[in-house]
Length: 148
Image 1: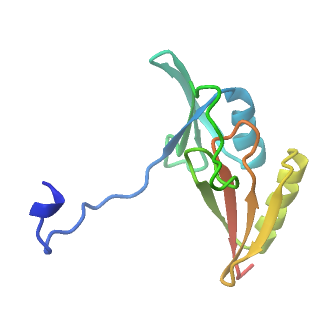
Image 2: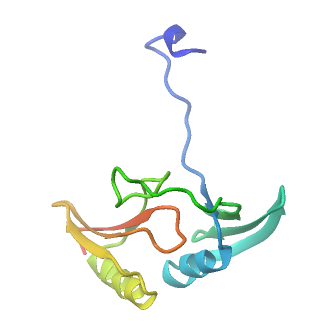
């Protein structure tokens, strides 16, 4: 059905977010970052269409929340309009349970060698915004609630 033929009474389908996949050039450092710094667990590995895959999750209910796949082409130009953002993905954001967790993550990012970490007070939440992590497809934002 095209938008022009839909009626105002139709609702969108019921859906919930499942996972996202990231194309990477070098899968090993990305796997280490998501596991060692962000606490994801490798749930599976595989190959598809000649690409290596690593499945990651932080939930025992989800086989994967992130899939890393080799095959990102070299030489993708940077975003020249807004250099804070990656060339294709604007940002990847994660919620944390309060300010103490945000502080813990800050220390982990520093230990991992992330160079540009910007704390931001949004009024209703605090966040840490990172420049694109080396070899990552975009910048990341980590947000804690104000109740921490």
